Image (cartoon, rainbow, N blue to C red; front, side, top):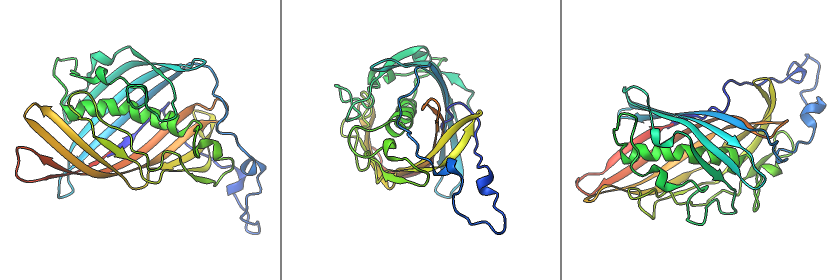
Length: 304
């Protein structure tokens, strides 16, 4: 799968005179800006934030040809609070294959509270506290129900957002996290490594469905600019991850899938506000599915 989570648009980076070395100069970091100590886990400012996120899901045929591209777009607002942040989905649209882009009305102006917990789960066992019920029987603006796999893509957009902007970009309470990256070039094994959160959703993605992270790493790669804001560039890498899912799209139909995932990308963290300015992520997913009504297994390759 290939995804570009765009949190504010444009990028990119510059390194000033430190990269413009004369023939006789030593190739060491002499610029004090590059050698200083940073606090990437400092408290965030309290200004409201707005985000735009786009995810492209590309499906490949066994011969390597691209057979389908789905595009999901999210507009999300955040109002910080003293104990929890309030998020509002301004708009969510989907574009499946060659069909026109269409809104998902049930998510328009949906507001929820995000509160970090030690496990990443709320009291109902929901990842990041995202309400499963909101994604049950989703339909587009034309009244067409979203299939189970497409509805899951919609739900997973919110999981991705908070995974990058909160789980990775905010300090952890147990184990290593962003707070341990102090200098350029440092790399840590994140506390999310080898965790196995549930990925069940409503009545169609059954309990027992899980995603297991590999050795998750964060690396302080450099400094850059996003919309003229100085940012820390932090790379994340999931390592060799895996998953298992039990999908029940209809009462007499069950699909059991197992597979592997590898996602990696970059966070751009504003050095003045500590809010995430931009995320770029790529993921490759390989799946083998057993369908209760079919004799043969189905293999799939997806890029986000």
